[in-house]
Length: 198
Image (tube, rainbow, N blue to C red; front, top):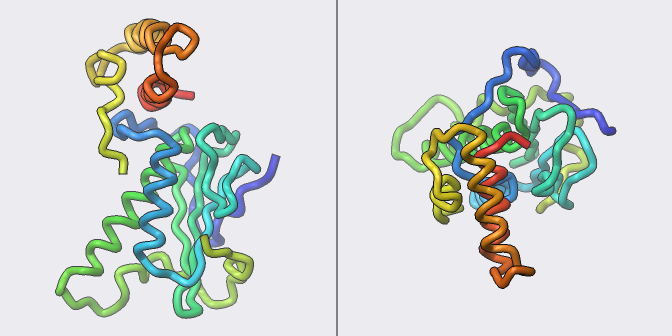
């Protein structure tokens, strides 16, 4: 097990205070894809994600099946030789923490495109103090599909038992060995990940 290199000076959320977010209609895989797109849109020099285990892609973003004991996520980047980092561990689920970082990066990038003048960069809050060498080895590197509850045919706030029963039924209907398509079966698997805790 690897240890998450949490940025110095960033407070950790106590495990007992981490809260699940059931409103995110996205999988870990689609979230990391969207985050990579956001970072490319920012046009930074280099960026890298980090989780607490080795189930990552070459850019440090977690694989779709990553499930580290520490659900925290850190995103680091350099731009014009300045180093930046944002981190989140507010949820007990890695997917939610990556999604929170994605939302923050997107919203901050969008604000920087507005004709409003501020005293500093929109990303100033993420700037790391000089002397932090964590970014020295950083390397370069939308989901609009049907909501998960609709894929499973349940209400967005359905109880876990109803979701589990719907998952079993939909997997049986869509499994490739039973004449279903791999794509539809994968959508059911992803919807299960969204609706239920890993």
